[in-house]
Every structure is written in structure tokens, then in C-alpha cells.
Image (cartoon, rainbow, N blue to C red; front, side):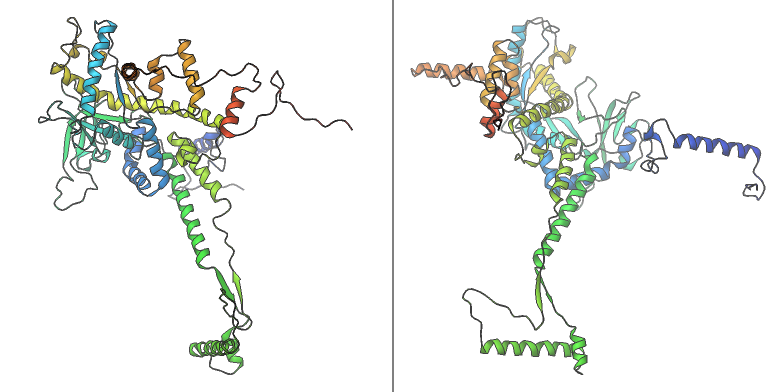
Length: 572
């Protein structure tokens, strides 16, 4: 038996069409059994999984608005979402960053001592600028530089996934004219809702290499609704920098794929887990409330309508109501004549044959906590926190696990801080440095043959930014370890102080002041010996000693070679 396939004209298919169909069938068979199982189509898990091939920016441009709106809703209404962003900002920015100027003295034709003197002056002027009580560093004049940095970090590591600011010029500022205006990233968009073009990507003008050359900012936030708002459909174009190189627009984001001109939040991959865990929590809460409200049910052995019908009585609604009324009146009369009196107890009487059944509270579900904790661990891992940091639940943490988690997570914080500093803080610092050089504020400390700022701004902008301290889990032993590293020349005071969020120069100056003051009062400033060296006969390892001290867990007795001793039963 032969089968002949006809075309739409009811005639046999042409030979070339049949040949093309056979080629396509062979190709489909090859695709369904690919060399890599992850690219196959015959496995049930991959049969319907056919994602589109998006570029990094194209994927974001189509989804950015709805994605950011949902994440902002999470930040407003979900406690874990708000807490996660706050933890990141606290650990990366803290109460602000301290400048440690490091101009490259070798390329600026200075000695190390000359560069050190210039650095001290730059740092002093920077403190005047960033800690100004009148807040001229902020275009809105509501924040110091620490507040500007915190707001930008909240956008960069929160729902938006990027931070944008415009460096403005305050003509009426008394000392420094450089001001920072943090812009909501939602204002950066294509004018009048235009589609992306070859050199216009989601509000960013780019050149042939993909480098941004300017930004289009809507004059008003798209959600800013008030009477007479005419700025919703008006845009301003702002160049990335001036013709002589002074930064104007500061844009900080992590380019997760080549060609991206806008940032995407680290929270995006875990949105589904956040929504599911939040919904599950709501459903469990509602079920628990219903259990509490519906505490008991009354079970009756008869149907009132059948009872009335058997008695030949009216079975209407009024008849049922009259039956219950008569029974209740008779019951009240009976117990009124012979009351049951128990001090402090209220007794409710049921109708004949009825019994009360109490509901069994089964919510929250036994797996509720495990499900939510699993979702929170996924969220914490995606945004760069530990589960304990996100939830503030330290009940299952001991010294060893806390120490390991701190070391691991601190590397992530350091990387995030470094990237944010280079993209956001460095351009601001460069613009401010240009201003103080133009005003001659460093002329009295600059060597005569130094390279001017405009000839090598990159060398002048080298700097370290000292952020929040790493913290100590066991301050005593970690201070001893730092002292050992210093004595062995494996570290420096600058590095050790920076890890704790401090400036070693300012600490040294303060200690000198304290020493002088104590000497004037005739007091001894020599620190007392707080720690004795561990005895050589101590057969406990350092980790065991810490565990016992921190967690109160006794360590097992050990042989002098370190083998735990085991109690053995004597032979019978």
C-alpha cells in the first residue's frame, strides 16, 4: 500500500518540494538527538523549551519597564526585598566612604613625600566638600556625599540595577561649585517613545563602538502625576562629558553581556521565587486565620425539614425557625428551674443529639518554614548575601561557619564596592579635582615642576575609597593575628585600618593627640597587657578553644598528637 501526498492544488507534490521536505525531516531528527543533551528536543524537559536568541540590550529593552516596576513593588511591599537592599547598602556604603588620595607621583614628576603632602591637602578639601553642613555637594541640597552615595547604591544594587547622576555647576555656591544630582533611571528613555535605533539604545546615544556619548532624560518621572505637569512628554539631551573631558553624566551598572547600555538588577532572576514565597505566606496566613475564626462546628443528627415533615408540621423557613425557637425556650426554662452553677465557668447547652466538634489547626503547614527558607537562600545567593544576613537569623551559626561565611561574602562586597567606586565615585572625584586645580587651591603645596592636571588627569585621580569595616567575629584573636601580620611585614597599617573602615593617618594623628594630652596630665598611656600567650602545654587546638569560648561547646579530650580520646568499655 502506497501513500501519496497531494499539495494544496490536489496534485502530487513536485519533486523539488519532496526533496526539501526530506531534508527538513532529516534536520529535525538531528536536532531532536543533539550531541549535547541540553540542546536536544526529545527529552521531556526540553521538548517545549525554545527561548529566543536575544542580545543583552534587546532582552532588557523589551522588559525593563515592567521588570523594574515589579521589583520596586517588591521593595515597597515585601519585607525581605526591602531588607536585602538595605543589607547590601549597609555593607557596601555604610555611613559613607573616606577618601585616601593616591596620585601617581612617578608619572607626575613628584617624590613620594611631595605626593603625600599634596594628598593630605586634597583629602582635607574633600572633607570640606563632602561634609558641608549646607550640603552644596548635592544639587537638591538635602544630602551630604554619604547620602548621595547611599541613594545611588540603593538604585544600583536594588530594583533598578543601575545608578545615574548628573554633575551640575552651582554658580551661587560659596566654595565649591560642583554639585551632584541623582537621577531616577526611569527618566532615561528614548524621546517620545521612539524604538531603539542603531545609535540610540534605551535613552542612551552611542558611537560606533557602543560607547555612550549622551543621554536623553525625560523632564519628569513617567509616574509623576500632578495637576499641570507638562514635563511628561519633554526630554533633555545631556552629553556624557564636556569637550575638554569633564564628566557630566555618571552611569554605574554591571554590564552582564557585551553591548548592554543599561543595567539589570541582580534581583531579576529570583523574582519568581520572591512572588511564590510571598503568595504562599499569604495563603498560609489566611488559612491560619480561618482556623482561628472557625474554631468549632455543631453536628446535629437530624435534618430539621425531615423532622417537621414527619410531624406533619409546616416545613417552611418560618416553621424551622419556630421549631428551634420552641426548643431553645424549653431548654432555657428547664435549666432556669434547675441551673448548673460552676464558679468561673460558662456552660453552653446544645440541642438534643447535637455535639460540638473542634477544628484541628493544621496551619502553618509543616513544610512552610522549609519552603520559605529555601526560597530565601536562593534570593540571598543571587544578590550576594548570606541567608543569615538577609533574614537576621543567626540561630544555627557557630564561630567556624560565621568566619567562613564572612571571608567568602566579603570578597563579593569588595568586588561590588570596587566596581561601584570606579563607575560612580571616580568621575565625581575627577570633576571636583578639576575645579580645585582651576581655582588654585593646591598651588602652595604643588612642586614647581609637577605635571598639570589637564595633561594627565588619570594620574591625579588615583585614589582608594575606605568603606565600612569588615568587622570581627572574635576581636581578641583577630587583633592578635593583625599584630602578627604587621610584625612579620605581611601587611601595612593602611591595609589593616582600611579593612576596619578607618584611615590610618587620622588614627595616628588622634593617637598622637591622646599621647600628648596624657603626658600633660602626667598619666601613663602604655596599654596594659590584655592577653597572655597560650600555654605550650595547652592540648586544645585554636579552633576548638574558640568554639568552646564562643559557643560553650566542650571540646573532646585529645592525645598529645591531637587524636581525640575515646572512652572504651573494659573487657568483660
